Length: 481
Ligand code: F0G
Image 1 (tube, rainbow, N blue to C red):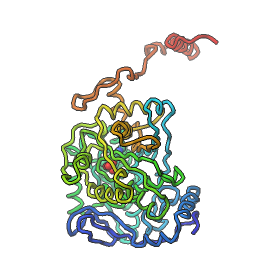
Image 2: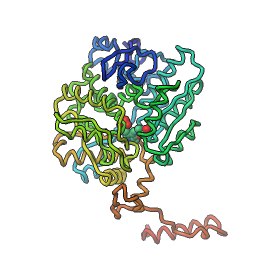
Image 3: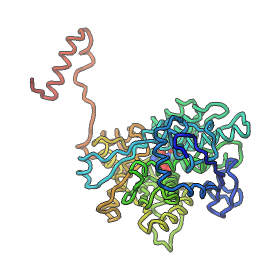
């Protein structure tokens, strides 16, 4: 098998229900089990065929594809056989997603925090969040479906805290007919930057009062009763695409993740599902020899998954929570639809990697903001959810859950620019009381206007340059050479 050619393996994809175990063919779009209503995961019935190729060979193939001339294999689909191996090359949509860098914490940030870690900058995806990984797979699957069924119009819908809608609208706009994108947002609960994205992509942007959980219920009803394609992570094809995050972490560290701790912010819980699933698949194929440890992180203001795992094993009961305003707004979800998937995969993860292989930690809003501001002052580009991961790592260390000789990879799930409003609130001490964040005033940063607007009027450029330079020299107390 040549790494630079389009892959020969074709699998047979099947939905597996996590409630009743029923199986259905993957050639139609399903979100929940028609028998019992539970969420689904996808499996390749021919996955065992992949085991005939040794793990070392898979590593070589995936490494070689990093330099492939095939556009279709440049992004997340360089892991084609592990994702949706019934797609043809013509189906694959690649907008430059994946291949995001892992940037070690700056030496001074490492010294300041006393922990050894790196950020994986998933904000460097095309719509500036990790959602593009899942959308690349979901839209490639939609193209496959449209081709087979000759559909002439497909309405894609999603509820969103901002990033899913940005990604869905962008991919739909790129693919074009027969796809049309509609996004449903909780009014006032996505950032202006996130809101500008589906608007710019030409999607129909609908808003409702309430929070994400309310909008999610609405799109679930729509997907049940009407002809629409749901693009939330209930759509299992998105989970497959997001597994690429795990493959890339392993590849970055030369396929050795022993001693690595992977921190993931948890909202609707699709991402942590995908990350665990990806590592398990690699272990199964011998591509990695050990699992890393996976840590989910939640804010005190939206912590149902943390609550579940914090209870003693014998008393664990799943209960959604009512969310409070959170700076990790993209993960501000009280009733994550993928919780049953997390439960199932955490069981498998612990079975294969031991009790410490899966953990959930909780952080305060204050810790999230302090961590994000601190990271970015050291040259990183963490969003509030990326700040949440660093806060989670620091708490894990305090709790003795993360120790000597371990290294953490934190998911900076979106670009810091999408959440600059929270940075601004920190710098101006402008948080409404319900967030419970008091900024460290020493970190406040603001622009300084050195001359009044009138100073530019009526003078030539050379005169203005001297005036401006004088003002800078005075402000910085510069010494002549
Ligand atoms: N970080 C960011 C930047 C997100 O946008 C999200 C989820 C999460 C973390 C949590 O990931 O839901 O897979 O557990 N955003 C979704 C959205 C809900 O609509 O954009 P999760």
